[in-house]
Amino acid sequence: MNIERALTGKIALVTGAGRGIGRAIATRLARDGALVGVHYGRSEAAALEVVGEIRRNGGRAFALGAELGVPGDAAAVFEAFDAGLRGERGDEAAGTEASLDILVNNAGASGSGPVGQAVPEVFDRMMAVNAKAPFFLVQNALPRMRDGGRIVNVSSLASRRAFPESLAYAMSKGALDTMTPALAKELGPRGITVNTVGPGFIETDMNARRRTTPEARAALAARSVFDRIGRPSDVADVVAFLASDDSRWITGQYLDVSGGTDL
Ligand SMILES: NC(=O)c1ccc[n+]([C@@H]2O[C@H](COP(=O)([O-])OP(=O)(O)OC[C@H]3O[C@@H](n4cnc5c(N)ncnc54)[C@H](OP(=O)(O)O)[C@@H]3O)[C@@H](O)[C@H]2O)c1
Image 1 (cartoon, helix red, strand yellow):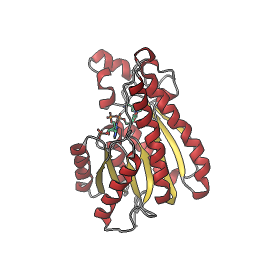
Image 2: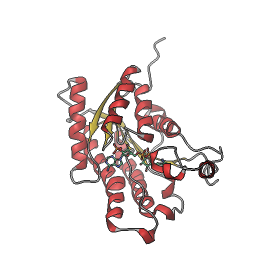
Image 3: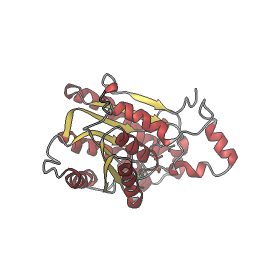
Image 4: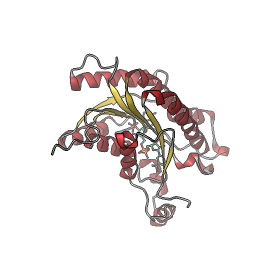
């Protein structure tokens, strides 16, 4: 029997894949057979490590760097993506058509604080990295994406619950959420699905400052009905499902991936 992996022949781009949740997503998609563009902003060494790990395990990946939240960011991402793809496949058609199947908008910036502490620069940065960059990444991705493609946006439970401790962050994720159903409707005729995952607290650098004591860790764990803090793989496994053909009849949705937080 010839067992084919779920994403064999697919090409994926995962933003912010050198660390945290993005790293787990890139690793999982590669394990499922996809060729993965491992995007990084500042963490080049970490992204190269992810690529090395994927290759050592028999998968295919390449790293690409571009800061998000700055003018021209989406075009810079795809310029680097095309260069990486050419290097990997020797494919001169990279960047023209059929050079992408899965876009995961994972990269995100946090730490905006409550309204009283907000400053315009930080507000703008939240919007630029968490909402504007994914919007223009999608715009750049669509001409390259094969019919039947997948877009997965990594949002946050913060957009669906009152989250005053980081309000501009929550608002930027709300903007990202709004993009999902509208794009799903527009792209349905092409068989492209667009979905959002909303993680609760996941053990990454993003919330390390909330886990500095055993008591603080226990309080975060208690937010989930499973009484543990989420792992990056808890999110990556759901993204892998949304990236696969098995999820073909799901689009425009927000999937809560929070371990039953606040139930
Ligand atoms: N951890 C949680 O509890 C949690 C909960 C809900 C939602 N999320 C969401 O999950 C996603 C991943 O977060 P994480 O927990 O894995 O956080 P993380 O460990 O802090 O990683 C953030 C990632 O985003 C990238 N990034 C941030 N700002 C960037 C910029 N300006 N340009 C390019 N890349 C940038 C980083 O890349 P470089 O290091 O290469 O710059 C890094 O790979 C984010 O969208 C976050 O909002 C996380």
